[in-house]
Image (tube, rainbow, N blue to C red; front, side):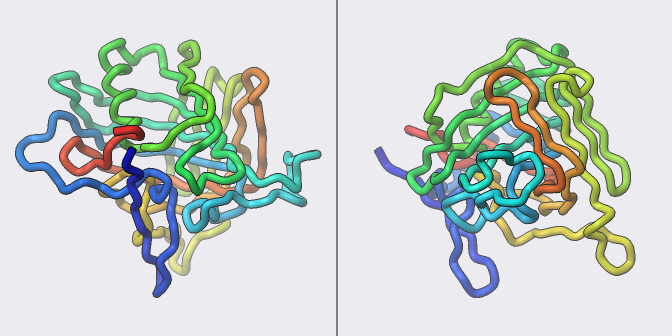
Length: 252
């Protein structure tokens, strides 16, 4: 099975990004794509600002970070990625407005392209055919293997809001999950949010930049995989992906 490798160059150094664990994009196809999606993500994780996973094959160790408790010496990246589809279509199925929530743990070493676990939760408004389309697209956006089978949780309402320097996402009103991003602490001169643009985001061929916004809180509050962290990494990103330019799904 061919492993795909994607390289990210930052400054003068060739550094590995998340997409390294996915692989090399095949040559772009021609003609109208079978599917395409433009989506904005409110994203936060347990790593310090800015998440070192985009530059290495191991997450940060977490000594002295609030919420890490007895596992402060372990390496892991526990994240919430909350999507709102701006515009999308999958073989005639419209995806506009769909909201879904990914809670995940990348594990302690993903150099072989294997992450630990991921749980997907859809807003109740997302229809069956949209879910099937989104599942296919996600396999290309995050073209990695999971140690545990990908889990789809029961539907829960998702709140998604972005205003100025703040972004808020809540799963079941915050009872099941919560992300609050606050970009006020990292404003550039002139009051603009800092943006990283020359960095790959997983398997996305295009994006408008990582808008840096540390979190006030990022939590997943359901079941044995629950976690909660404060003051760690966060950003927003709007990406474009389509069947012609996306990398293959894991195992393809």
